[in-house]
Image (cartoon, rainbow, N blue to C red; front, side, top):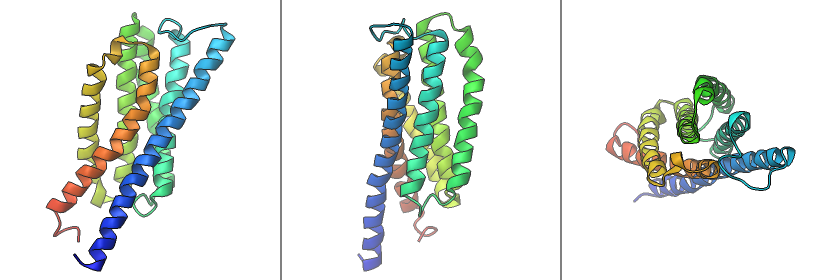
Length: 211
């Protein structure tokens, strides 16, 4: 192995852990903000416990909007901030993430309003969180350039398939609101792991193109 390839490998490993830490931190920050919103709602409504029945209607909509928007925006912001070599179009990426999350919330809003059961509402919430997170991650990969776009699309698809299976496996759609809220950091922890692993495999199979 040449000195240059060793440096590239070390840099790749460093980016791997940096990207995971950045995305996880963003997911955690968004979750903490959402939890503060939940506590504020409890305080305003004189609640004493966190149950699925406590958070429904407008309260749940507020929490889910804050959760999805703050987690996705924070994760992508940290990602672009600490891996500037790959994510060079920070402003454009963040603008895309901002408008995507607004658009998705408006799109799923009728489903939230028409939902008649807590289980169905949380199922919609899960789909909303997955789509907003994967869409945000996908924009980051696309704005990183053609070199990363294909690997990013494959990585996002694989990670979301895996996460949905886990989400259904733990029975989250029929569980309470807290399970759905606390699943968000896990989404952002898994996304970069699968994306970066897929990216490395993609580069390995196309080594003649990406020297």
